[in-house]
Image (cartoon, rainbow, N blue to C red; front, top):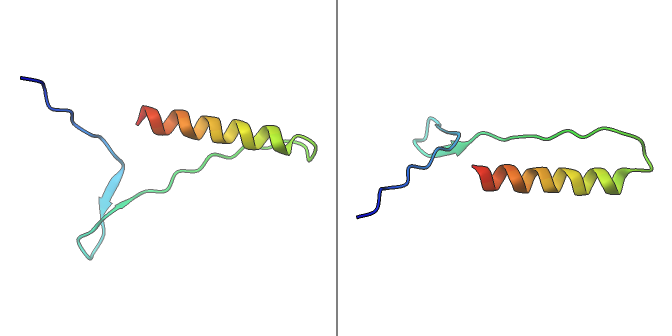
Length: 53
């Protein structure tokens, strides 16, 4: 037998009874010239956080 995997999410019940996931934001600031690097860094951090749960 394998142990059951328990998922931990950031979900709350709203008044209609449906679960709703809280939004999460990542803010990366810097100069105008480095906007491509900020986008890549933000996407990478988001992917890592999503994979980690």
